[in-house]
Image 1 (cartoon, rainbow, N blue to C red):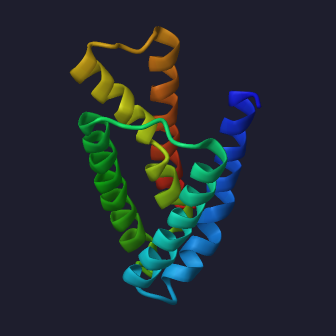
Image 2: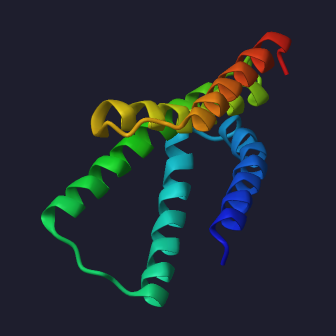
Length: 139
């Protein structure tokens, strides 16, 4: 399947997902939500492993997978607590959270000396400007 179509489906999925996510977190605890999320991830992982099989792994790959899982869990925890705040506006939280590709690009430049192109840099500025604008108008 076309990777760009998959990226669009990902954006739509995340966009739609945030509505029930926010509703759930205002009704159950973050811990309960993590249990549901964890079981779901486990089941999806088992299904994908069944259909795709494993590639095997080395210790370094496993360390990176653990690090990514811990960082993801920390980010989700922060997101959960921001969404649970009754004064928080989901649109602003979603917009701020969606700037993570900008963070990734900055980290790539700092760690791997992989600098964004002029077009990528311009688009990153547009993303940041959009978040600022959304925050100012308070959607």
